[in-house]
Amino acid sequence: MRPQSGSEHKTPAVPFSSRVQVDLELLEEPLLLFHQGVPRQSPKAGLSEAGPVGIDVGAHRREILVDIVGSGQTMDQAAQWFERLRSTIPPRSGKDRQSPEFPGFSLESKFESEFKVTYRPQAKVTATEISNVVTSADKTVGFQQAIDLLAEKIKGVCEESPPDIVVCALPDELVEYCAEASTEFIETSRASARSPREKLFRRMARIELATGQMHLARKLFCEPGKGEDFIGRNLRRALKARAMPVNRPIQIVTSRLFSDAAGGQDAPTKAWNFCVAMYYKAGGLPWRLEKLSRDTCFVGVSFFRNMADKSHLMQTSLAQVFSGEGDAVVIRGRKFQWKHDYERSPHLGREDATDLISLALSEYEKATGGVRPRRVVIHKTSAFWPFEHEGFTEGLTSASVREHAFVNLQQLGIRFFREGKYPPLRGTYCRLNSSKHILFTLGYIPFLGTYPRPYVPEPWELCSYSGDSSPRRLFQEILALTKMNYNNAFGTDNEPITIRFARKVGEIISYVPEGDPIQPSYRFYM
Image (cartoon, rainbow, N blue to C red; front, side, top):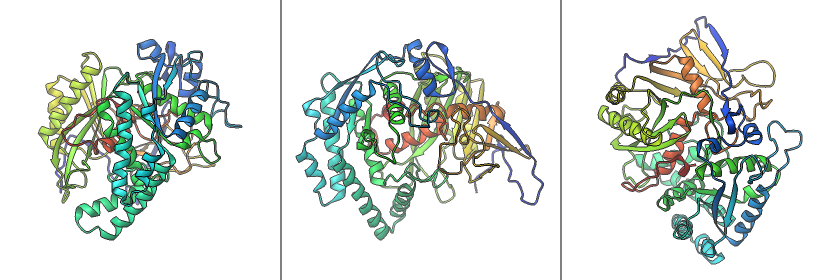
């Protein structure tokens, strides 16, 4: 049994037999700032009317140099796509609020930026090269051949006159081969898993196959899957990890991006998401939050296991540092053994916690030009054990940080319903008996006029917290941080960027060989 920490506020269970007092409050939707300080709730509205805030703060690119890696067919499709992005793309009929017009990505649009695309002969994946991969009877060998092939093409275009971003337009043949490899992997793991390590892999495979975005620790906490397969997801992660040494972000796309077939995302939505992500990856800043304190450093703490490690018990800590200005930095901590016999999730020792937060603060100062934060907020999806609490506190005290908050945030399966066809509003803050604190980051969104998801939303629960901040302030910040995912233009994510960032980074770093350097910027993990 783990020891208890007396410094944390823990939310007690609410007995079903007791009378429950429910207090509801709707937190204000956070505002985003765009060019010339224009405030808007929606990223699409702000970018359409004003343009990116990067124009004001020296984080803007008028030209974004792009190289394409792909087959002859996907290169042609990519060329047509980039040409299409230069002009406006009309909104989906009857869905102007949810899917507004895309204004075009050009110097003449509010983006004040354009893509300069190059198609180099050495970047083409030939039919023979594709055939050599997809005819491999051993799917494990074929998967590695696919990574080697694409990584070599990326390296080739970055050796001379490297672009800002490399777009990998994957041929359908490689994508389909990976889907077949996924099926084979799942069937083999089910039949042969015997050791603890093999059982862990089998369980992970089943969960990822069913949920797409989820990983083992989070299991079924969030939305249902999106049909993405285990090996296919790993292809993306392994390629991003392998491409890190070229020091250029990559954008992986498939033929679905270029198609307007029914059943997929509409064209303006795809254009919005693609261009916001590309602009940020190239060094631009699309927007920033209006009220998030500039002197607060947000840190997401997570753990990952390197895929090459022979022991499934070895874990490595990660810290993802996020500033109020939009900077996001990755810090890899120490490797340690997870004592899973009595620990349901990995936890840091005191010294490891001190070292990790000290590294995080050092990187924060570098990212902000030498500014030391006055306040630090640490987000975790597991409890803070006493030695973690003590270690983090020691590191913050040594750095003369005046205020802190340690936040254990989880989704525990609670569901709320309201009259009518829509769920509770996004931003609904619920207090049960003045002790249990719950926040809906998803729900009916007034500025969209709808709830844009197909499932009942699951709120976040503040399982424990300690430090100098009230639950209301912590939830206001969490709601604001759900708007800081630059990988799309929705502005209403389920997870705060600290939690999402932690998960996405861990998925990719698990494929980086131990001891190899990692890229510090989130641009390489999107």
